[in-house]
Image (tube, rainbow, N blue to C red; front, side, top):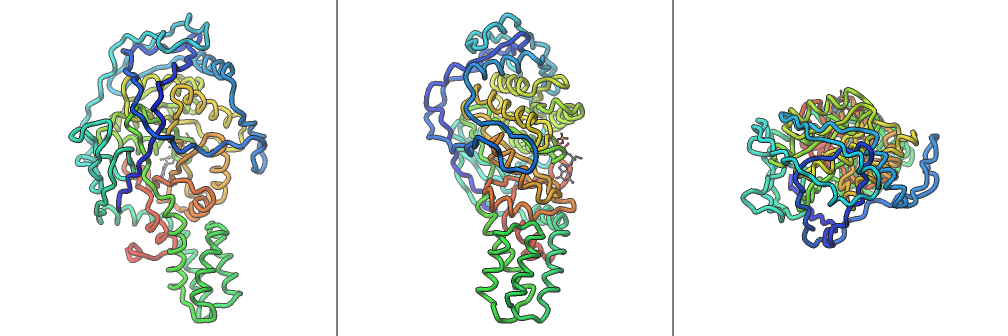
Length: 489
Ligand SMILES: Nc1nc2c(ncn2[C@@H]2O[C@H](COP(=O)(O)OP(=O)(O)OP(=O)(O)O)[C@@H](O)[C@H]2O)c(=O)[nH]1
């Protein structure tokens, strides 16, 4: 797999604005030496996240998600104050419990305290040095040498497959066949229901029949029932008609054209997750409906990044489910990442606020924030997500830099609606499809890609820490169509 390292730039050219900080009643004051937040070097404008349309969002049921009109400064400052008030942060670094989190009630008076007024005095949390997990000892086979602008070459981490950084130079690297076959077999196994159902029906449709309008219509119906979406179904039938209309056609012909057309839809969205390591932390916010694999996927991402030598902090923003906080702590320990959490029921935006501050003070490379699972039609829960994004944006205009949505491959059609709402509310700019090793209905990813054109960075192919693979368009297309290199595996 050629590792495309696409240059991504953010605007850091201007002086960093004094961040309006809202130390509220019991806001946590993190005692770490003042982080050196000198303005980073000049970068071009970032790609702006999808605009958030105001007005009622087109989705069945659920409440109006509210107007996305810009929030006034005072309202925002109140939100930050309220967010900081309603929780006390327990900051713990796996293997290093710190008790240096204190609150400064008097800071609560003004919602706009200057960040410089926040004296930070305790020692920064030393980087955690842990043995690499055996899988990432030498880094992924396919990892390319990267030349990071912010680090000299001999200390630049070798990013694992599926990640890129602003200054890295694309280097095609040969795919490690044994790794591809194993996860590819799991992918095929996961998509077996989709592909066997589809290829079985196609075979039945095209026994000794010339290609005519009726068979084209029947094929189109089959492809739509497999969740591929109307657009892709029509592309397949149009291409097939242009090649074989009025002639004999075999199911192999159909499979080949199906894989080809699906790959055309998926190739533009199969991209590495771009990290901008020229400033710290790169914030990844993980969102999605309940049980889609957010916390597990964060653990897998943390393993890849910390295994590559990056300093990772994970934040337990799912303050709704008790087990989620503990689950993420276990992932942090397992992946030698730093952990920040708070008490059950605390304000998630406040946790995100403190996590950012802590990650900055600790000079973490990447901060990955978990969130509570929520259905897209629960307006108050979606409003909470908006607040988390707003609070992070006040601390860094480009944060959260990556908003990942996890999609459960067994969901089917509803995933389209999930992406629509989460994208409008939280500015989702990347997808991860999980549970493709189960009885997946992976076809929906084709429909989502055709409609939303959002990058698909990884796929989950199991519950293990290594079961996260960079998304490969050709492999996925062949797995659905039951064709291609892996088809004989
Ligand atoms: N088979 C399989 N199971 C997965 C995968 N990813 C996650 N899971 C499982 O899915 C279940 C839910 O995963 P979580 O990470 O807790 O999901 P979540 O989105 O954080 O859940 P909530 O916090 O309830 O929203 C767990 O049992 C995971 O082990 C995957 O790729 N394959």
